Length: 134
Image (cartoon, rainbow, N blue to C red):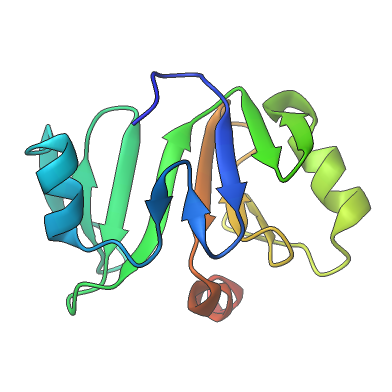
């Protein structure tokens, strides 16, 4: 896990930093230890909350989302500051849409609330339809 505010390296639908979307709950707790908080959120996902990063899993154990604080998002060779992320998404993802205050980018596999600085959620590919349905 990277310290709060450092760049978030995103390979859409594949990994966030060094965490692949194939990681299990056991993988996360083996590497990071027990979370500060854990529980079930309002949309029925099980959360492991480590303070500056939150992992969300389905009941069956599949990793759905990774939310982390980041001032810069690394998308391949492109570094996008959080403050310009909304404009970047709107310019580079014709399929982007808004739901519940979040800007969702199917092309980049992420969702974020532009009014909530530095929190970015990387989503698994199958989650895009769930976001659309909100």
